[in-house]
View 1 (cartoon, rainbow, N blue to C red):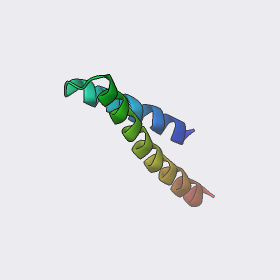
View 2: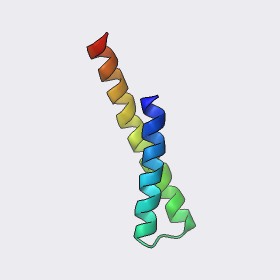
View 3: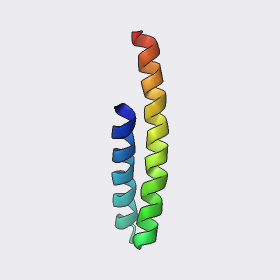
Length: 55
């Protein structure tokens, strides 16, 4: 669940960042995809750490 939230939050963050910098549609899509992957990886690591600490 944390990973899905991380991916969605990352995509939104990347899209807003690209739009703020004046990017075209392709730039917005690329920033959204890259940020979604980065945030997803961080969220996956957080999920593993939480599972190991709690379990």
